[in-house]
Picture 1 (cartoon, rainbow, N blue to C red):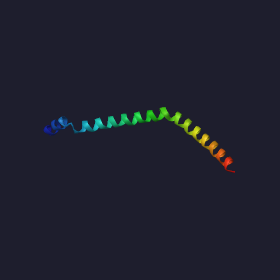
Picture 2 (picture 1 turned 30 degrees about the vertical axis):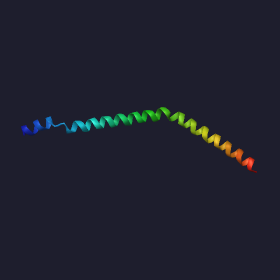
Picture 3 (picture 1 turned 60 degrees about the vertical axis):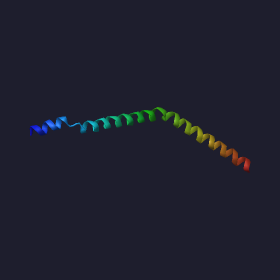
Picture 4 (picture 1 turned 135 degrees about the vertical axis):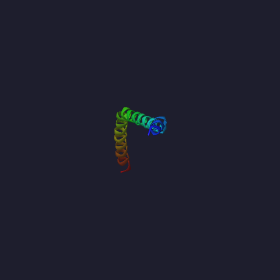
Length: 65
């Protein structure tokens, strides 16, 4: 039993897994922060694009008649 405990303490396989979990959590956190930062600008750009396309389609329909 003592040898099992000594071997368990020296084993570093789990440490690599913990490193990957922390790294993955950091990447996900940075991704969420980036999306939150640009979300307002993207919403504004999408609204402007929709409005401009609607106006262009109306103008094109009026010219085609």
